[in-house]
Figure 1 (cartoon, rainbow, N blue to C red):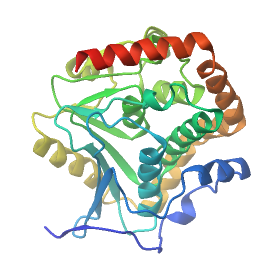
Figure 2 (figure 1 turned 120 degrees about the vertical axis):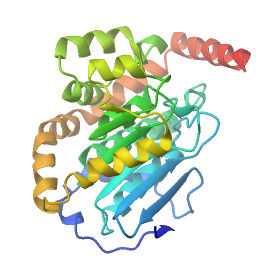
Figure 3 (figure 1 turned 180 degrees about the horizontal axis):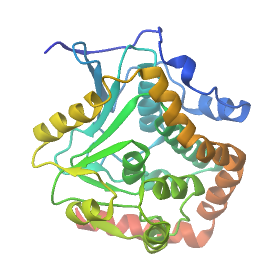
Figure 4 (figure 1 turned 45 degrees about the vertical axis):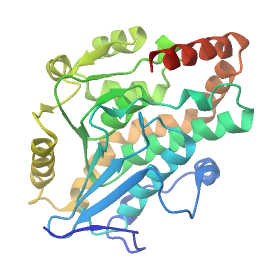
Length: 294
């Protein structure tokens, strides 16, 4: 199998399908721009199959800070300029897919840092959710909060057994952003169950997530999950990439429009919440409790 680690070129067959960012989105996008080589991700492309694998590697928990999220986002954007058919998103850890937003970056942070972190999260979600690539989340560890966001923003989810997945924002004092609510509702069979899950910070086991419809398949090992991920991408081999991508984006267009219309409001809610003394006190205690468990 011819697999290469790549620094991606500039050509695209699919980039014309990606809706251009709005003016405000372009402004936000510059916050995490960087010409530095990746520090927390590895990207490989199989030249034979046209399938890319993006591996998250920010030990110990793949916590999402602005730099990390910027790397993931740029990798996806650059892959759209490759002759790739699909993307598998996975983790180098054997225990954690991603534990979500790096809350250490939120504690005693100035407004500019808080804004940069949330804008990076918004941009990452938008890029993954709207990409014309066929996307699979290979969930080989716990996927909590932002980790679950990465999973539900992908088209297909394959999870290994004995892990946890869910959105626990309300447990740590944060409102679930409307775009993540819409994304979650988009895959759950019942809007009512989705509301219960998100308001109560419900965390599923791998097995219960499959029964609930939050994930699509289970695999007994990462090797089996990789095979199933490739099989899902290959299931579209007789469809034209362009027609498929346009159809996918039409399904997701309303959610993306709602996000663009409410992007600033979403940021304002986050900044207002994070700057409250009570929230900062809670964060300090929460982070201290995590340190005590190490």
